[in-house]
Each structure stands twice: as C-alpha cells, then as structure tokens.
Length: 587
Image (tube, rainbow, N blue to C red; front, side, top):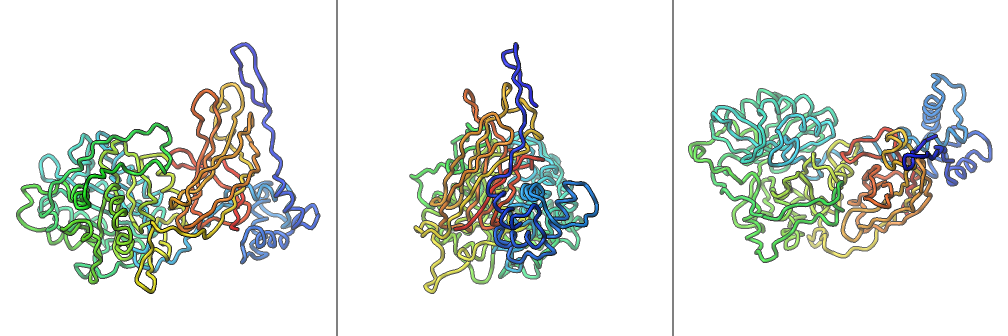
C-alpha cells in the first residue's frame, strides 16, 4: 500500500497490485502442459524449441532451467521434481537472469583480421567530464575497460619541466595525470571484461627524447603482453583470436609527426542538448559547411593526431625504439580525402576522420569508404566543439564499415545508449564481426552502397506485455508526489535511414506494474545493423516526462520468443529490478 499526500490536508492510498501473467503466457502454459497444472521438463523442452526458437534444447537443459527457477523461488537446495507450476513458469519467463533477450556468450567467428570487426572505442579516455576543464584520471579508463571498451585513447604531452610525460587534453584547463599511472591501470584492468586485445591509440606531442621514454615505459609495463609486429608495416592485421590478452599500440610513426601541420578545428557552432538524456539519434548529424570543396574538408578535418605536433624541439631525430612498438600505423597521405582512402596492396593502416569529415566523405566517396574499411581501420572522432563531451550518431560510420567510432564514454545520452547496445552483441567482448555485405564485393567488383535503395529483408514483430520492478528501484514519490506513476514505453529501430522509426504504447495511469500488451511491426532493409531501442517514460501533464529506464539491443542477436528485457539508467548502469516482458518474432 502506498500513501500519497494531497495538498497537505488529505491523503490518497494506492495498493500495489501484482499483475497477472499475460494471456500469451497462460496460453503457452496450457498448451505445453497439455491442460495440466504442472509443466514437465519434456514439455518445457518443447516450449523452448517451438516458441523460444532454441532448436538445440534438450531435456537436460529444461531440467536445469526448472531447477534454477525452483531454487530461486523456493530457496531450497534440492528438489525431487523438475516440473513447473503456472507461477513458476511465469517467474522463469520474467527473469532477466534465466531468460535474457540476447546471448551472453562470444559466438562470432574471431579468427578474421582485426579490420573485419567493429571495435568498442573510447575518445579522450582519460577525461572525467567536459573537454575543457575536467580532471584527467585513470578512473574513466578503468571504468571503460570494465565495460568492455577495447580502444583507449591517450594524449601525450611533456610535463612543465619537459622531463616526463603527462596525459591531458592539450591547450585546455584539464588537470593532467601521469602516463605511467594510466599504463599500469590499463595493464591491471585490460582483460577484466574481455580476453580480446586492447588497442591504445596515442596522440603524441613529444620530443624524440620523451618518445624514447614512452617506449621504455610501455615495454616495461606491458612486457610480453605487448604485440610488436615483426615487420615495420603489416600486410594484414592479425585476428582477435590470435591477439587474445595482448596490448596493441597505434599511432603515427615519428617521421610523419615531424611532417604534420598544426591545423586546428575551425568550427564555431556550439552543441546544445535541450533534452536531459540527449537528442534523438536522427537529430545528431553534424552541421556541415556546404560551400567547402572536398579537399577543403579533408584539410580542415585532419587527424587529431596531426594537430599540434610540430613542436620545434622535435625537428632533430627519430625515436626508433618508439617506432618499433607501433603495430597499427596511423596517418593520412597528402593529396586530399580521395587519396587518403586509397587501398594499398602491401600494407594496412589506420585513418582518422572527424564526424563532419566522415559525412563529407560518405556523400562523395561512400563506396570508397566501404572498400577502404574492408582492409584498413577507419576511426571516427567527435567534432572539436563538443565541449560538453556529447556524442554523435554512430550509424553513419557503421554503415560504411568504420571499425572505431570513438565516443566520449562520460557523454551520457541516447547516442551512447546506441553504442552500448551495439556492443552488447557477441557476449559484450568489445569486438562485433562486421556483416558479410560490408566485407564482400560482387562479380563486378562493386561493394555495398549505403545510399542505394534496398528491399525489405525482414520484419520484426515486437510485443510489449508488461513491466515491473520500478517500485523496488525508486522511491514512491520519485515520479509523482501525489500518485503512482503513469508509465508508457517507446520502442523502435535505429539503423540505416530507411529502417529508423519510433512508436509508443498507451499510457497506463497510476500503476507501478503496468500491463500494455501491445504489438508493433518493424520492416528492416538492413537488419544486420539495426538496433532495437526501448525507453520507458512516466507521463507528466505539466512538466517534461520523467525517464524510467532504457536499453538498446542488436536486432541480429535477439532471441525469438517471450523474453525479459532488463532496463538501464541514463549512464548505462543496469537497474536492479526494473524490466519489461516482451516477445520477439521475425516474420
């Protein structure tokens, strides 16, 4: 029973009523228990195969599920029966641990070259907050690694006495952190969430003497964990499987730093997020200056690593020890964007583009970008005016095969939710195999054209049954001081433009345990790149609707059937109890 005070003079009482199982759940129990009051392990196995799409399910699998449900519900260590009552069956289906919406294990082929994977990538990984004045620390790096991020970016600068190396966002008010501290934290936490390789991208503003010092630090810290290629330039990247538990360094060779020009981002627009949890992804494309030529765009959107690197002291000698550590060579050839995207037969490399440069490149050279990313790495980074550490729309990069979409992991909001969603795929290991169509060419040598109009490939039917758990995760007056919450669910698709849409359920008033039982159908032209977006909000007549949880799930990984979808807060942390019961079917 919940009591809410009205106008200070009287109170209203609302009882939290347990919601009954949806009709589909009751019907499934009746069908597979053959009208009985218990479902045996064999009957549960049939349900798993026919409704849940688990074609390989065995009686032993069903017995294990029944045992876990009974132990969880009745807190007893041993049971003689492996049969479920209707309530047991419902509790199994509405358990995020026992009935998740996607597979929690690595299941992609991990033996292809690194460039065949999307990689969970951080931007300015050391920043605790905004890009101009927040502290630099190893704490955000540790948090990112624990979440499964596999690419960590460090900006290297001389300290004030020019005898040591600091990590900081150069020419800002950010307080530095020592490089050695970051390296030690990376070593300690690199493989806490994933066994697959961690790539450290370095933005280097150092003298040859300090580069040599970095080489020594890196070598001593990582030892045998460090992957150093035998040849100066690789012809093909090794696979994630080959590089398990290895650390990889990626930066520009010292000679290219000496030749780099000190060009700065000249954008003047300022981001404004009028929505506390971020703009809709469709609104997040970069503002473009249409009067620039393609070559102008390529010159003004240089690698972050190209900028501020022409220190006078560097014009002396190279650092050979430092150069030998670089496994993934970065750099942009002279001659504009078209030349930068040229695929070289005898070596692979990494190219970095800002979000605006990517948009310009995809407008003019979309298939060239796709062809480049079949063999080489393409890293995309946020435009320089995202001072508040906001993020951008990742789909443009993914559609063109860009492996490293560098995000501000402290830039909470819808864009980061999408990134979290993409990398829930493949067991959350931080490497997601790119779809075959991005890696192949047809008989005429033509590659995938993201701008081409495509036929519908699949239809996804989603039913939102009900929700529960908010009364355990939030105070009774969190959403409304005078009554229980009025929840509704937004559900939709983010992916290629033709697939993007959002829909929503009706509002269920004054109910902590809402039952919607509504169905939606989504047509998908590129299901391999589609993410299912789910958000729960609480309707507020006089103010902005309150946020009540969210998740994003890769459509290609969705399990068929009735599933429990756990919800996450704005920062992407899992809520303890809040969850939805949903059903997914491909038709």
